[in-house]
Image 1 (cartoon, rainbow, N blue to C red):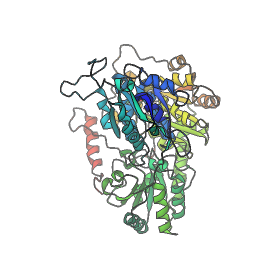
Image 2 (image 1 turned 180 degrees about the vertical axis):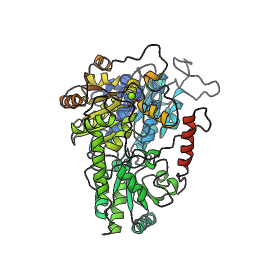
Image 3 (image 1 turned 45 degrees about the vertical axis):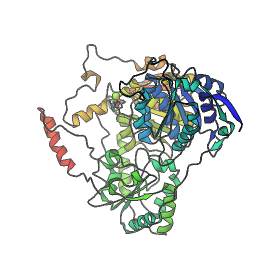
Image 4 (image 1 turned 90 degrees about the vertical axis):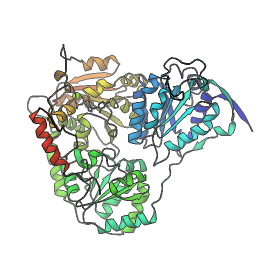
Length: 608
Ligand SMILES: Cc1ncc(C[n+]2csc(CCOP(=O)(O)OP(=O)(O)O)c2C)c(N)n1
Ligand SMILES: [Mg+2]
């Protein structure tokens, strides 16, 4: 047997560099790295040796480097990914939030935190946590609940089994998610005679499981028996590449569609069977269909509470739930009739079996009326006062085209965009599984790395910007342009509204309602400019529109700051959301909200 003598770290990166997509690209595009104790000597040396084949990029924070990697994988519909490596200890635990984000959103990312010495010789090393009762525990065990595969590489030959398992998970359509290979510091540096064959390039195909014959027949029967079906398009449709199949299916059988946050942009908003979104951040016309439907066909959705109005829509008494999903876990939720299969394959098979079966027209007039309502919400203001988030969205909508991707994660904007944004196919990127503040700026960078031909628009509130913004400097350094629209409403606007909606006093959300000695005075323009971005403050919506135009073709990120009104919500469309209100309180407003809450929960159907 021919062997190659390499350190475990050298072998790991060499192997990663030859894992290919069917299109002939590397599955792991590159490695984000912040070096420190636990990865600089081992992995650092190995990455330097391979940098012309497998690039290494340096960020400013492990969590946000991982956000960039996750956004990259999401943009590539899980067909390509990135790795992120950190030192042992804080660098590693900084990545745990990002691992959870990837886990919830079912997105592949390879985490390679450094780990303690396998030989324990220098224990306790810098940053080692020391569990008194369990010698096998390290800080990296925090990853276990939030990755789909965990391994600790404590011998050089472990990578022979760990790496193929890692790639298997990342390319598995049902089990896809983050992987953690915690890499002991001394093991990284240890040499071993690896079989040369291990480094033969391998192509990873993503399989498309066919439906079970009985489940397929039952799904067809359920659709035939329906009078008013409604399709709920989830993120799985996009990951399956089933966007065209959904549209064809809907058009052929005349079934209206609504899209979840992860599914939005699967179908161009202009398609007339597209009725927007369902649930808490649903469109008026979409939720009307949801209320009237006798069969809800979920495709690639995990039925998160925003989608289901905390199970006040899409459940009994009047309707049946059919869930088409690649994973039995999602397909069986709430007692739904399951069809476990790849979305594209399933839709083609169902459609063939349905023949020319067509349903009656949905209420197209309601859809037209909805667009009139939202046109008014998004129109440029003509009076004085701070603009609303809806007006900011309108300005962005009017100044971007079909080649744009609007992206966001937390705050007012995700809900407002879900309900208002008219997404072109492939034009919407929302991290609303974990809704993690601080995903935005780094995520925008990851999207642009995956899709340089797109104009990436990052919508971020002042709160989320303050939580994590330092990859802006990385994007400047790496020459990755995107446009950030930073809405400054002086605090956590959406939570402030939610607080009052549940009877609470305005407290600890807006900056001025929070404990302070000096009023907060954050200069966002100076802040972003200090990192090298092109920055401007828009005085009003008209200037925002002009600056959005001016940002086109920029070679570095542009940040446009605009002051907004924290008070108005979207003002249209949505349903109830279950947020538990205190049962006893000295506040009259809380007691009233509790009363309304108890009434609302009576509309929840917990079992189908
Ligand atoms: C990491 C993280 N911490 C806390 C939250 C809870 N949270 C959701 S939105 C929000 C406020 C966001 O404020 P901002 O970005 O300014 O948006 P706004 O609603 O004011 O437009 C908070 C605290 C979260 N989603 N993520
Ligand atoms: Mg804010």
